Image 1 (cartoon, rainbow, N blue to C red):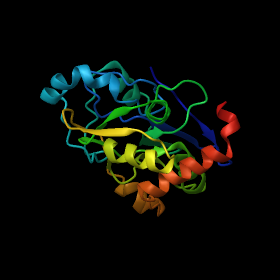
Image 2 (cartoon, one colour; image 1 turned 120 degrees about the horizontal axis):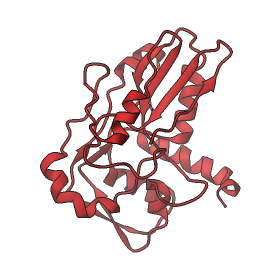
Image 3 (cartoon, helix red, strand yellow; image 1 turned 90 degrees about the horizontal axis):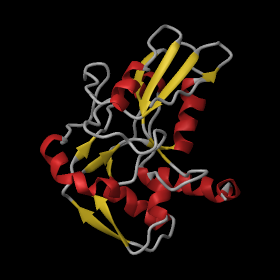
Length: 222
């Protein structure tokens, strides 16, 4: 399944960002195309994934071929727009959901007792509030920007990410280090940073911004 998002700018350029990398997600389809899925559904597949799912990460566009071979990954790749008047951003997001608790943040905040934190699962996406800022402040104003770009934060493990979310959201829960699953889908966004001047905040700052937005707009999520 492919979700497509468009923004119209005064220059009539067309923008698309793909909220998931077409890099390999071999042997699985993500839960929720818009956000990073939660982890627990993967536990029964860990042994199999350890054998054939260990990824290198720090993927570079366009040198690294988008090698996803499942329907989800190929649909993302085939949906990429390439042309003079188009911008395609490869990235991934986390954030709050208006309904449901399927994706990482809402799933984690709804748990009690303890959860596994994947120490070898590396993530380089953004909270939704930061991706919106990137598009608003760096993409739309740049009339000469076109082509395919990776847009990423500094890589962080899911374990460390959950620890930060728990601390900043004052979530009382035990996060158990879990190392039986390895996955690295991190992106190298050097080209985008050099082209636009964007410098990603550190992850603590990103989570704090996500939390402040949530607190200010909590009525939207009830």
